[in-house]
Image 1 (cartoon, rainbow, N blue to C red):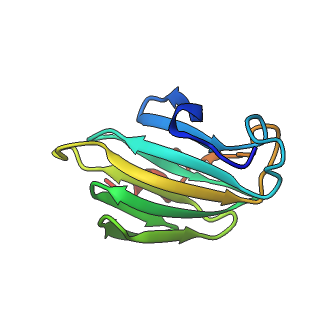
Image 2 (image 1 turned 60 degrees about the vertical axis):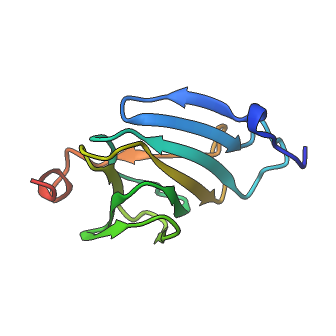
Length: 134
């Protein structure tokens, strides 16, 4: 499969938003190196502090504004801004409570890891991550 049309994207609803699986081994069997996601983060929500022990990640903000964390560094991203997350680096992405709409992100991780191509470890209850936004 070399073309993935908008209707081919598999959507998963999460507590903080929606995750669109664009490319992963289950829908693109030849996808051994990359995982591509279309992500929507609802206002006032976020993908709390986590890491990908075996993957690098690139996040491109398509629309909205987010508070992006990489390790203990924070930056407000505007549409078109990009964040690179090194392998194993703890990071998080939050959409402001007063945002007019969900933030939309284009996310690429590599290499593909495991049956879904994606591996995440929650770090939100660990220090210092649990206290950074307080």
